[in-house]
Image 1: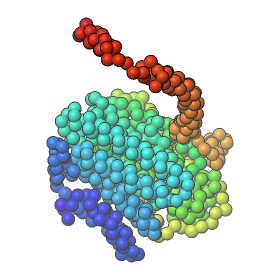
Image 2 (image 1 turned 180 degrees about the vertical axis):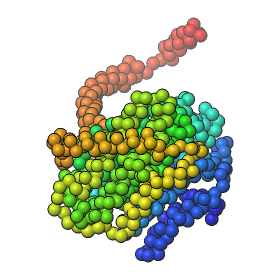
Image 3 (image 1 turned 180 degrees about the horizontal axis):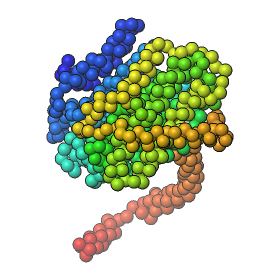
Image 4 (image 1 turned 45 degrees about the horizontal axis):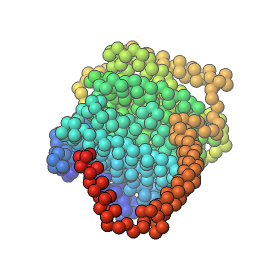
Amino acid sequence: MSSLPPFVPFFIAAALALVLHGRVRAFVLVALPFIGAFNLYHLPDGVLWQLSFLSNELEPIRVDRLSRLFGYLFHIGALLGIIFALHLRDRLELVGALVYAGSALGAVFAGDLVTLFVFWELMAVSSVCLIWARRTERATRSGFRYLVIQVLSGVLLLGGAAAYALQHGTLTFTYIGLDGVAGWLIFLAFGIKCAFPFLHNWLTDAYPEATPTGTVFLTAFTTKVAVYALARGFPGTEMLVWIGAAMTCFPIFYAVIENDLRRVLAYSMINQIGFMVCGIGIGTELAVNGAVAHAFNDVIFKGLLMMSMGAVLHMTGRINGSDLGGLYKSMPITTVLCIVGAASISAFPLFSGFVSKSMVMSAALSEGYHFVWLALLFASAGVFHHAGIKIPFFAFFAHDSGIRTTEPPVNMLVAMGIAACLCVLIGSYPRLLYDLLPFATDYTAYDTTHVLAQLQILFFSALAFAWLKLSGLYPPELPSVNIDVEWLYRRAGWRAALAVRSGARAVYAGFGSVGGRAVRGVGTWARRGFGPSGRLGEAWDTSRMAIVMIVVLCVFLITL
């Protein structure tokens, strides 16, 4: 078992899911992450496989502290998603989820760019099944847009890998940097999957349209593989500091006015990824540790919030804040678990977000990025507004919507309960996570200054929310469509394409008329000159032809 590549157990389970049924299938699926984690624990560090490809040495499996940490993380994410989805009977979604999880593991253990590309594209193809499995027109359209953008990321990665091989003579996936065209192509490929500003709308478009269970898997893998890839290929790239700072701030404004609560969480995901990107850009050991630790925690607490909203959607068929409220009366357990996730993402002391987010902020301050630190401080207060307060408040407390239902299936509650326990466990005993980080650290999250500062941020953020709500200034939850960057290609781009097509047709018609007259004129001239009655078409005697050939030969000799 210890010699198996980490992705193999998931691919085997995907094949078994097609033939197994009932409790046997449930047992196999739940056992899968434990078997995979046991296998990963016994894998030695180093390059385990090597292959020759076009005069290059490929390393399909490479194990080190960074890849091992993400490997454990993805097994936890897979466990939560599988338990949450045990009630499903949809084979498309189950198989897609298992292949998706296995592909994510293949990507983080890839030691070369070719192997990374293969799993990069396999992730795109398998993950779109979780969107299409909802089987609505909106999900179908969103899935196609998602797939196009994900495949585009893969094409850029492939082009960058080819250019990198020509430039450096190797395909090994290690530090790349922005040196030359290859680095920029690969950087852009990673940026698309990481939801950089102006490249982020695939996430907010597709994730809210996925199934309630599919969104849990989507939350765990795609963007975290991109964070891993940035940490591997571009640590210390200063541009990432400013990109990350922008990512932490701009989603707050969209999340505050958004009505769809799962879309609020999608914007919140971009906000949290911004902390990770910023830490990778700073590039110090503390900053990279903070970025990786926050990625670890984000999979758990964001998964918990997505599961709680998925449970609400599963039980009520509604997810807009304007349609919900008062659900704490009929879903009290889900309410409490959602609040645990909200406290974690808001970085309350004793919850997981507190012990990782502060590492990035401390690194920014110690490296002299004072403006960035202020942006991260603003983002920390903002995330408490839109995820820490808005999500549980409008789903469970805001007003009594009159909806009366029951708690979700037991498997959903168990998955949420495990995630909630992990949030509290990591927040209370952060050394469990710190010991897994890429670099050894003696960082202490629970110092007096940090605890008091964070409590002050949370207190004044809650006070601001209460004042805005009571004064009527807080944006109401209304059925609406918020315009984001995607308007440029979904609306403006489409209209521009239609205008270009109409103009091309007009130009073609005009040229067709002029061209037709020109062709007819050339035909008439040719018939007059070369036809049976034309000058060049009549019979010439031999002497005349000889004179013509002599003249041609003389011209040729003179010009030669």
